[in-house]
Amino acid sequence: MPDMKNIGITQQMLSQITEIKNARAIMELFDDKREWGISEVAETLGLNINTAAKTIKALVKDGYLTKHGMTEGAWYEKNILSVHASMQTTIN
Image (cartoon, rainbow, N blue to C red; front, side, top):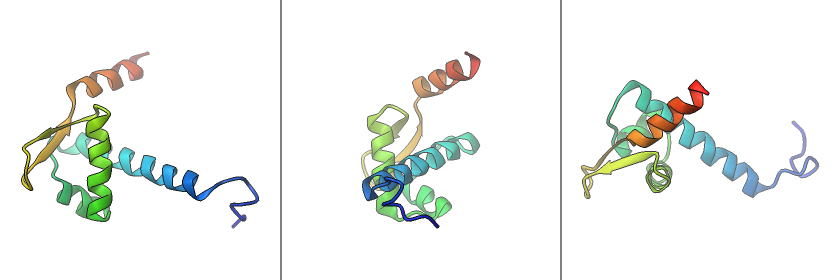
């Protein structure tokens, strides 16, 4: 395996790549099931619960997911606007 320093990849870049992969994997879960809780996502993807929560929170902030509820029983679904945007990208 090549030395990451020699090819210009920093730890921050690797972290960002991992975050993007996690976000993509989480969004793909919603193709199979409409509603997900954080613990379900973490267990299904083998993620640490805090990693899943942080990534889902970012997806809500960015408008990809909608949160329902305010407590531990909260669940998430794809934001209808993000579904529409992804359909437009696919069509174009």
